[in-house]
Length: 383
Ligand code: FNR
Image (tube, rainbow, N blue to C red; front, side):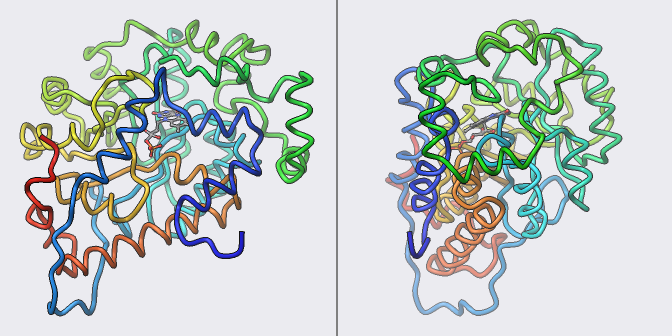
């Protein structure tokens, strides 16, 4: 591919370069994938109001997320197995985010460990927590995130149990891939990926190997998750986690106004309207359509962000106009990483930034704090 101009170009390139098992892991949703698709298509339904003959010089997309300066209201979402999209993927993505001036979030289920990422970056990053039954392990994980100077904890609230993703089950998803005939044939067509993996020792779940039993011989990711993750997690545990952590806390995976109120009551600093990129409850509404009532209910008490379906800077601007004071991207940065490594993640951020900046200007504004719901055509908004 000669010139990369939008996120879709990177998706196509990633599909060519990343082994099928890991590409499918990124580019899939649960069951019918209806919610996954709605996350993207509902953004398309919202139309922008074009304004003309407004001074558009001297523009800025800078803002803050939980008090942290950001070049634009976009953070890299926590994604498991990122180091399987590209060797050392979490380190590369964290470095690209740091250089661009946006936050990077490391997943509990990452390949590179908290310590790996900390030793290859100079700015604090965020750590995402999945709560497992072994609470001693969770306490130690939080201590490790503190020792690595992580500046926020993102508690994922929507994955106590795992939504079924057909492709992962059919592909026998595991890290590293098992040496089956199908995998070996597929790997033979992905020389860049194989060379990268030969050059790194980071091929298993870095935060977990050596700390939780059974991870070395994991049958499939879904079976292992079902055994380890705590289905009993509740709002009481949020207070326990808050007291262990003692820093900025973000609750991710809120789709309902009642849950948003509980998140605000919990004293968290931000909540993320998210359906996990359509990977958990298939049949849930798109994140962008769930956002407005949540902003109306709690937007004055807690920072409300959203993720799911953002594929352009236009989408970021629409989310902002509907009240999201931050967004996260998952698949877009994974496509960039799988396609071109660190340069690919940088490319994704550049594309989103340029699209956000130009779209804001076409709507007649030069700064995000001027942008409100009035840039959207009323009849096209989520009900
Ligand atoms: C995720 N997501 C996720 N969320 C989380 O809290 N912890 C995790 O480990 C993961 N892992 C993960 C892996 C992959 C491959 C994907 C695509 C997603 C969900 C993620 O943080 C985010 O909510 C969605 O990716 C947002 O939707 P988009 O941007 O991918 O459409």
